[in-house]
Amino acid sequence: MRRKLAMAALLAMTLTGCGTLPSQLTSGGGEEKQPVRNTERAVENTPAGPPPAATVSPSAPAPPAEKLQAIAGREMEHNESKLRVDITGLKRQGRIATLTWTVHNLDPSSDDYYVGSSLGTGNLDYTVAGVSLIDPVNGKRYRVARNGTGDDARCVCSRVNQYIKGGSSLEMYAVYGAPPADVSTVTVEIPNLGVFPDVPIS
Image (spheres, rainbow, N blue to C red):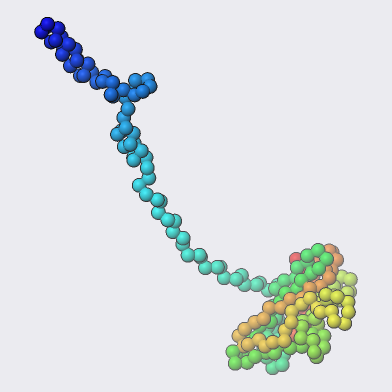
Protein backbone atom coordinates (compact mmCIF):
# COMPACT_ATOMS: atom_id res chain seq x y z
CA MET A 1 0.00 0.00 0.00
CA ARG A 2 2.77 2.38 0.92
CA ARG A 3 4.53 1.47 -2.26
CA LYS A 4 1.45 2.46 -4.34
CA LEU A 5 1.12 5.83 -2.55
CA ALA A 6 4.78 6.60 -3.14
CA MET A 7 4.48 5.86 -6.85
CA ALA A 8 1.42 8.14 -7.14
CA ALA A 9 3.23 11.03 -5.46
CA LEU A 10 6.24 10.61 -7.74
CA LEU A 11 4.01 10.74 -10.84
CA ALA A 12 2.36 13.98 -9.69
CA MET A 13 5.76 15.64 -9.15
CA THR A 14 6.91 14.60 -12.63
CA LEU A 15 3.88 16.16 -14.37
CA THR A 16 4.24 19.40 -12.42
CA GLY A 17 7.89 19.83 -13.45
CA CYS A 18 7.02 19.55 -17.16
CA GLY A 19 4.79 22.67 -17.01
CA THR A 20 1.72 20.95 -18.46
CA LEU A 21 -0.75 21.79 -15.76
CA PRO A 22 -4.25 22.32 -17.18
CA SER A 23 -4.47 25.84 -15.77
CA GLN A 24 -1.62 26.96 -18.07
CA LEU A 25 -3.09 25.65 -21.36
CA THR A 26 -5.06 27.72 -23.82
CA SER A 27 -8.48 26.67 -24.85
CA GLY A 28 -7.39 25.95 -28.42
CA GLY A 29 -4.33 24.26 -29.83
CA GLY A 30 -2.48 23.87 -26.56
CA GLU A 31 -0.37 27.09 -27.01
CA GLU A 32 0.72 28.89 -23.93
CA LYS A 33 -0.80 32.27 -23.20
CA GLN A 34 1.75 35.03 -22.70
CA PRO A 35 -0.34 38.00 -21.55
CA VAL A 36 2.59 39.78 -19.95
CA ARG A 37 4.86 39.53 -22.97
CA ASN A 38 2.11 40.68 -25.39
CA THR A 39 1.39 43.67 -23.19
CA GLU A 40 5.06 44.55 -23.14
CA ARG A 41 5.17 44.42 -26.95
CA ALA A 42 2.10 46.63 -27.18
CA VAL A 43 3.74 49.16 -24.90
CA GLU A 44 6.92 49.04 -26.93
CA ASN A 45 4.99 49.65 -30.20
CA THR A 46 2.93 52.52 -28.79
CA PRO A 47 4.35 55.97 -29.61
CA ALA A 48 5.82 57.69 -26.61
CA GLY A 49 3.62 60.72 -27.30
CA PRO A 50 2.23 62.94 -30.07
CA PRO A 51 4.82 64.12 -32.60
CA PRO A 52 6.11 67.63 -32.02
CA ALA A 53 4.07 70.27 -33.72
CA ALA A 54 5.54 71.47 -36.99
CA THR A 55 7.13 74.85 -36.70
CA VAL A 56 5.84 77.41 -39.16
CA SER A 57 8.56 79.72 -40.32
CA PRO A 58 7.54 83.32 -40.93
CA SER A 59 6.73 84.11 -44.52
CA ALA A 60 9.67 85.27 -46.56
CA PRO A 61 9.47 88.91 -47.58
CA ALA A 62 8.08 89.49 -51.04
CA PRO A 63 10.74 90.19 -53.62
CA PRO A 64 11.04 93.82 -54.63
CA ALA A 65 9.02 94.86 -57.65
CA GLU A 66 10.94 94.49 -60.86
CA LYS A 67 12.17 97.80 -62.21
CA LEU A 68 10.69 98.54 -65.62
CA GLN A 69 13.29 98.73 -68.36
CA ALA A 70 13.02 101.58 -70.86
CA ILE A 71 12.84 100.78 -74.56
CA ALA A 72 12.95 104.48 -75.44
CA GLY A 73 13.39 107.68 -73.46
CA ARG A 74 14.48 111.30 -73.36
CA GLU A 75 14.75 114.29 -71.05
CA MET A 76 12.89 117.56 -71.53
CA GLU A 77 11.50 120.59 -69.71
CA HIS A 78 7.84 121.48 -69.37
CA ASN A 79 6.25 124.17 -67.24
CA GLU A 80 9.67 124.96 -65.74
CA SER A 81 10.10 121.38 -64.57
CA LYS A 82 12.91 119.10 -65.66
CA LEU A 83 11.44 115.73 -66.65
CA ARG A 84 12.41 112.41 -68.14
CA VAL A 85 10.02 110.12 -70.03
CA ASP A 86 10.82 106.41 -70.31
CA ILE A 87 8.68 104.26 -72.58
CA THR A 88 8.64 100.86 -70.88
CA GLY A 89 6.55 98.76 -73.24
CA LEU A 90 4.38 98.51 -76.32
CA LYS A 91 2.77 95.08 -76.37
CA ARG A 92 0.49 93.67 -79.00
CA GLN A 93 -2.27 91.40 -77.67
CA GLY A 94 -4.52 90.23 -80.46
CA ARG A 95 -6.35 93.24 -81.86
CA ILE A 96 -5.11 95.72 -79.24
CA ALA A 97 -1.78 97.21 -78.25
CA THR A 98 -0.93 98.62 -74.82
CA LEU A 99 1.60 101.41 -74.36
CA THR A 100 3.21 101.97 -70.94
CA TRP A 101 5.56 104.76 -69.91
CA THR A 102 6.87 106.56 -66.85
CA VAL A 103 7.30 110.29 -66.27
CA HIS A 104 10.08 111.18 -63.82
CA ASN A 105 10.34 114.56 -62.12
CA LEU A 106 14.07 115.26 -61.97
CA ASP A 107 13.69 118.43 -59.91
CA PRO A 108 14.43 118.67 -56.16
CA SER A 109 11.85 117.20 -53.81
CA SER A 110 10.44 120.68 -53.06
CA ASP A 111 9.29 121.15 -56.67
CA ASP A 112 6.13 119.43 -57.94
CA TYR A 113 5.11 118.90 -61.54
CA TYR A 114 1.39 119.10 -62.25
CA VAL A 115 0.38 116.77 -65.07
CA GLY A 116 -3.24 117.91 -65.31
CA SER A 117 -4.49 118.20 -68.88
CA SER A 118 -1.06 118.45 -70.52
CA LEU A 119 -1.35 114.93 -72.00
CA GLY A 120 -5.06 115.12 -72.85
CA THR A 121 -7.03 116.34 -75.85
CA GLY A 122 -8.28 119.58 -74.30
CA ASN A 123 -8.07 121.89 -71.32
CA LEU A 124 -10.49 119.82 -69.27
CA ASP A 125 -9.24 116.40 -70.35
CA TYR A 126 -7.26 115.09 -67.38
CA THR A 127 -6.26 111.86 -69.10
CA VAL A 128 -3.48 110.78 -71.45
CA ALA A 129 -5.88 110.54 -74.41
CA GLY A 130 -3.69 112.90 -76.41
CA VAL A 131 -0.87 110.34 -76.66
CA SER A 132 -0.89 108.68 -80.08
CA LEU A 133 0.94 106.05 -82.14
CA ILE A 134 2.07 106.79 -85.71
CA ASP A 135 2.47 103.86 -88.11
CA PRO A 136 5.33 104.86 -90.48
CA VAL A 137 4.65 101.97 -92.88
CA ASN A 138 1.02 102.81 -93.60
CA GLY A 139 1.09 106.50 -92.67
CA LYS A 140 -1.64 106.06 -90.07
CA ARG A 141 -2.15 107.61 -86.65
CA TYR A 142 -3.70 105.55 -83.84
CA ARG A 143 -5.69 107.35 -81.17
CA VAL A 144 -6.35 105.99 -77.68
CA ALA A 145 -9.24 103.50 -77.59
CA ARG A 146 -12.52 104.46 -75.95
CA ASN A 147 -15.13 102.38 -74.14
CA GLY A 148 -17.97 103.53 -76.40
CA THR A 149 -18.90 105.79 -79.29
CA GLY A 150 -21.01 108.46 -77.56
CA ASP A 151 -19.94 111.83 -76.24
CA ASP A 152 -19.59 110.34 -72.76
CA ALA A 153 -17.24 107.55 -73.88
CA ARG A 154 -14.07 107.48 -71.81
CA CYS A 155 -10.58 106.63 -72.95
CA VAL A 156 -9.02 103.32 -71.98
CA CYS A 157 -6.05 105.04 -70.39
CA SER A 158 -4.61 106.69 -67.27
CA ARG A 159 -6.22 109.63 -65.49
CA VAL A 160 -3.54 112.08 -64.40
CA ASN A 161 -5.13 115.00 -62.58
CA GLN A 162 -2.29 114.96 -60.06
CA TYR A 163 1.19 116.13 -59.13
CA ILE A 164 4.51 114.34 -59.44
CA LYS A 165 6.76 115.29 -56.57
CA GLY A 166 10.39 116.14 -57.23
CA GLY A 167 12.47 112.98 -57.30
CA SER A 168 9.38 110.84 -57.88
CA SER A 169 7.74 109.29 -60.92
CA LEU A 170 4.35 108.29 -62.26
CA GLU A 171 3.54 105.28 -64.43
CA MET A 172 0.92 105.68 -67.18
CA TYR A 173 -0.73 103.56 -69.85
CA ALA A 174 -2.97 103.77 -72.90
CA VAL A 175 -4.66 101.13 -75.08
CA TYR A 176 -4.95 101.30 -78.89
CA GLY A 177 -6.12 99.26 -81.79
CA ALA A 178 -3.11 97.18 -82.82
CA PRO A 179 -1.23 98.08 -86.00
CA PRO A 180 -0.98 95.34 -88.67
CA ALA A 181 1.27 92.39 -87.90
CA ASP A 182 3.89 93.53 -90.42
CA VAL A 183 4.43 96.78 -88.47
CA SER A 184 7.28 96.18 -85.99
CA THR A 185 7.94 99.75 -84.82
CA VAL A 186 5.93 102.93 -84.41
CA THR A 187 6.49 106.55 -83.42
CA VAL A 188 5.01 107.56 -80.06
CA GLU A 189 3.88 111.19 -79.81
CA ILE A 190 3.25 112.58 -76.31
CA PRO A 191 1.79 116.09 -76.17
CA ASN A 192 4.17 118.64 -74.63
CA LEU A 193 6.76 115.95 -73.87
CA GLY A 194 8.04 114.99 -77.30
CA VAL A 195 8.21 112.41 -80.06
CA PHE A 196 9.80 108.97 -79.68
CA PRO A 197 10.60 107.28 -82.99
CA ASP A 198 11.23 103.60 -83.67
CA VAL A 199 9.52 102.22 -80.56
CA PRO A 200 9.42 98.41 -81.00
CA ILE A 201 6.17 96.47 -80.71
CA SER A 202 6.55 93.22 -78.78
